[in-house]
View 1 (tube, rainbow, N blue to C red):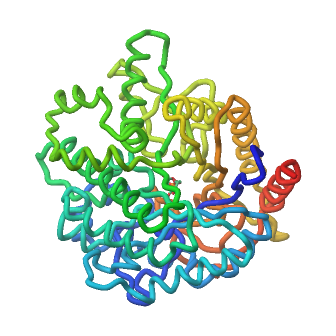
View 2 (cartoon, helix red, strand yellow):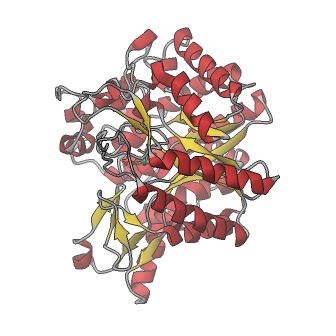
Length: 473
Ligand code: BGP
């Protein structure tokens, strides 16, 4: 697909797969205090209370124990023909409290070995620097990304990993789903919110600090290795208007801008003109210096990476919007033309093509699909097989639409399927919300052998990669 260098592969994240949450000197991360199931939503909504609550079971503590199974797992990815694997480095594995004098050598060694293993199979690492795992110590001390000091901690961590892995990594992603700070601020930014403060002010301030951190990472990274390629990362998905009533269309434009806002800054280097009114009307007054503006202007990203699961639907009618549900943290009305996943996420393959075209028209920078997939219940049959035809169907339709977008003229670096091995769900903490080509024997209460099994989709994806790579020759 689109040239011989196209990166077919999969994506995982440390906070959802590594486990070993205190092993070899690792510190706690914000994810480590979040429980599973319904309680997780409450816990994410009030992080302050969560810090004082004992929930008993925390799924991230063991994850799928990728920390001890990575060789076996990478061998399976290689068997499928992966050309790339997106991982994240766990920040508190490198700086346990975020502000330690020296990095944790044992943590660094883990990623040394991981990169050696990837190199063995010629799998390109795509590395997210911060994927939902701000060190818990920074959350407790500063309230997460609401404090400018967290930028220094992040950049110190960046410098260490850039120096250490400068020969191993080309593709970096600065912050996972940067727009998540507005929707699940606990996950996205480890934000401690106080009652009765202007939440919008705090969230946009944290967003500004994350944008600065991202630009700072680009600056430092390019000094260390000019060949580094940096991507921003958006939880994408076009917001449609419920009707052709202009006020609905205007509302959908407003909602789309809420997401594009971040990428406008990271790709174009300045706050978009519409942000002035948005800030004024919401009583937002940012701590932003002239130096900040310069940093943003001079350190834009090389590519636009994004996750895509669903499109969204909105209306200007406030009464109607009371019926909105949340699919992947974003409020949406039900789209009568589309089906939903078992978790209520709208399934919209054509929406991927629309989203890609919008992103490319807007930024004219290469795109990179770094997450896409279907979270579903899988059933292990008596003969041990897992016939996940629904997943194959979902992925096939999305890959077809991705190809259409490329024909439309979109420049695309690669396609990475989310959760290529089953892992803990970020939003629900469940293990039963599975995305993988590889099944992991583990349940929602943490029991199970952790053994890995190939699903039907394993061979299917292997064939997709093979066929498309043949076409490239
Ligand atoms: C994105 C996150 C991932 C991943 C995915 C699926 O928001 O970047 O970490 O988890 O969504 O979401 P979930 O795990 O909630 O099904």
